[in-house]
Length: 422
Image (cartoon, rainbow, N blue to C red; front, top):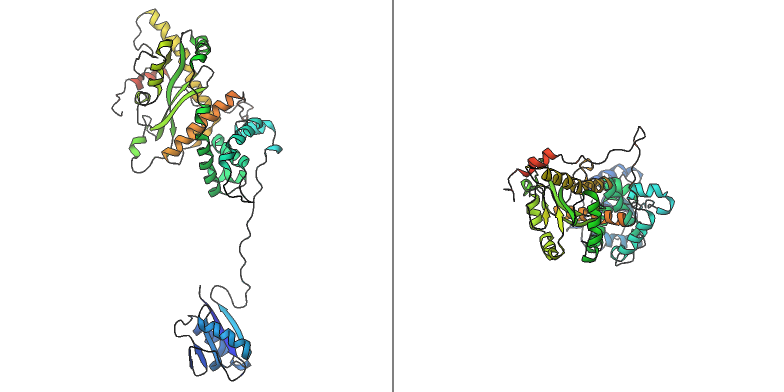
């Protein structure tokens, strides 16, 4: 924006020092304002009331001529009239926008049921999680208007539980969308540091209890985990979009999970795209190494027919011919079904992982962090015995929030597919 000063000399004699002086008008040779013709026209209109056009000075505000003219005005009583291009003559200068601080969310004013519905954790568990993450969420520079760690944790929990857009979650949390985007990355990075404290594979001392819990499901002994994969939708990168298209024709990440009989997640691997087969994900994870170290304990994992038959992995018989094989498949199905219920509970508790919550519009690396964070918080809710609550529907029932489990026909069809995508 160009600003110009029009200077009228009321008294004769004397003019601003420096520059060029022609016919009583002072102009700066280095820079002449583009408003000079307009100023001249205004002065011609003001001529009848005593303004002398030949004794006017045009100079840009930032020029040396303007500073000299202002110095001369103090000595010769020059009258200064200001013309601005971006606003009418005489209008007051626009003030800067005053920052508006939205009220932040307050956990103490909410009912416990509403807290669990909104954040999937109770108040005591949220306070414990916030105390653990507070050193990583505090800003190194003390800012009086910074977001408190508790508000950061609550906003991220609301985002993971609702699967909504960042703008909606930011407004309800009392911050802007760009600020919430930074808060999300900060909280996810802090959670990744404590992943091994929340997702733990059973140790040797815990194996008898784990095997007893699985035996109660289907009466198969020595089972310490159920393994399977699920897909989490995302918006794929443009450079290799086809790699993320899964067998159901949508883009996703293939997430491998091992769970216990109480739906506790003991292993998660979320770094492979949706086109990769479950067997390939399993072979390139830490599961083979861990199970080979436990072979002396004579324990097994249980999985569907999409996995190969390994010494430490039990799969169903594809074509049972005897009654014993049919009974084994029935017991296998009752035991393995716990992993399907775990997926249902995980995606119902954190809607950002479910198809109804839409596709995650983040990079694959950040989507991986979101998935692992949801698994960590799922285990935390189970460890603290936080009940899973859902809002009632219009007819008084519970809103259906889980997708149906894969049928046996779909499973058989999937296992017959080639593993060429590996």
